[in-house]
Image 1 (cartoon, rainbow, N blue to C red):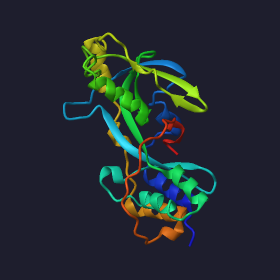
Image 2 (cartoon, rainbow, N blue to C red; image 1 turned 180 degrees about the horizontal axis):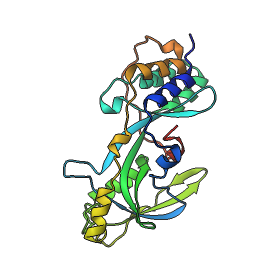
Image 3 (cartoon, rainbow, N blue to C red; image 1 turned 120 degrees about the vertical axis):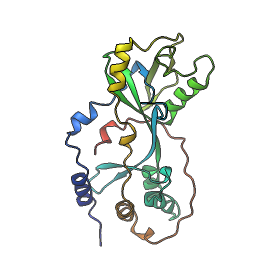
Length: 245
C-alpha cells in the first residue's frame, strides 16, 4: 500500500491549525538581508529560560516536489523513524538513495528573540549552526561576555554574503562597545513581546513520523538500524519559506 503523503500532510495541518495564515506567521521572523544586519539578541523570559531554542530539522520532499519540515525527535530524546530511514538509505548501495539521504539529513536549527535595530520590532531569528557558533563564540569571549545583557550587552552585526548560491557569515560579530539595549520602558515592552521560540519545536507523533519514513523507503519497514549519530557540519540556509509548509 502506497502512503498518500499529501493526504497525511493535509490531516496534520487540520489538526495543528493555529488560526493564523502563512503570511502572518512568517512576518514574525527576522529576514536576514544581504550585507550588514544589526540586531540585539534578547535574554530568556526568566532566569530559568534559555535565550535560544534548539532543534534539528528533516526536510522531506513528496512526489509533487513540495517540501515539509519535520523536527527530529531524536535530539529531544525520542525515537525518530526519519533518522532510521536516513541511516538505512546509506546502506542500500543506491546512488539515488544516497542523494535522498543527504536531502533528509537532520540539520541543526536555532531560534532566538531579537530586536530589529532598523524597525525596533521583536522578531524571531532562525539560524543554522554556523551563525549560532559565531554568537556562542562571542559570548564565551571575555571581551564580550553575555551579549544579551540589557545594560552592558552588545548589539550583533550579521554580515551576509552570498557565495556560489550559499550564504556566508564569516564577518558577523558583536559591536565592539557594550551598550544598553534601550530604555527601561523599551526593554520592558520588548520582553513582553517575546515570541514563544520553544513552542516552535513541535515533535511529530511517532506513528505519523513512521508512516512518512516508510513512504520514503518502504523497504526499511521493520528493519533494525544502528544508532549512529549524524554530523552537524552543514551550511546555513534560509528555512523561512518552508517553516509553515
